Length: 380
Figure 1 (cartoon, rainbow, N blue to C red):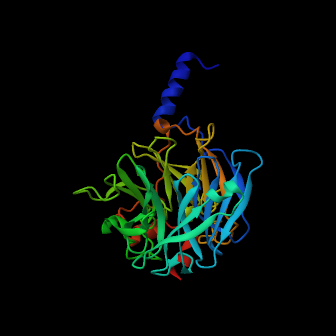
Figure 2: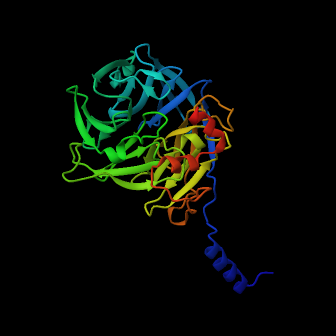
Figure 3: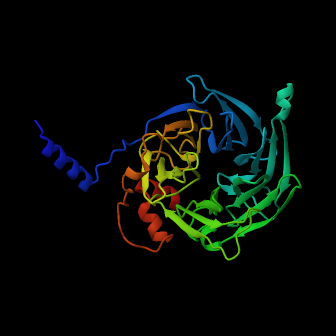
């Protein structure tokens, strides 16, 4: 029998050695899996709970998954494009109107310069039995691969668009069909010189007057103060929010609700990471050698009452980095229950296997984080 004193001592011991109350990995379930090869690239959860996802392989398509919070979700094809072969990111700009990014790529992740632009998916005709209206609004000839899109909180018809190739953010007025440079910060937005593909700034989010973004090969999240009109605030510069000990960081979201915890999809090692406001990073779901979140690329929180703590994660099926070097699958949407994650009691960040202190973003640092089974792919 354990006495009260014994219980106290055990509790103190548990606190000392870092045993945490949070139970990991977080519980999850598969909502819908697409056929192989389907590479999902982005996710947007509409206020009515419908989940819109875009694909970049084997074609550019948009799908809608309805009733994701039930036992009987349904997936339907909205449109497959002939004009473009990559649809990279999507967001809602007004009720029943979505803006998304599309263009052409020569191979997966290699955008053809000048082919990307902001497109519109207008769902309003569906209310009268019609078909959605899809059109390109603004082409950006000077741009490269456009990766992330975010609407301004106070003027949702204006979107900020990340350009992974050029390492900057465009400001696009979807009503007047005009674009201009919004933010440029070479150190934090450009891809590093050793990157396998010219892919730098990726996902975008706006919170409390800051624009947040991920730089994929640097596996980092940065932010900069912006004006209400979407420009960099006077004198503002990009600042590091968190460097993740991972091979790669795809896109991320903030939440749930007004919570500024960062939830990032690590893609290459099939995990979901949570970064709490105090800077603690915790891998909360998935594993490098598991198919659970094979090729996790994009998270987004549910919007319906009772579902706002559910994080929906879109995956690529590990088509770029096969699990265990050989295993791939069709992309899928996975629902992660985040209610068990307690920000003040999160586990400590996973440490790299080899702890050499190379400069952040250096080629040696990147190589030391890559599982050996991936090296042959990256260096061939």
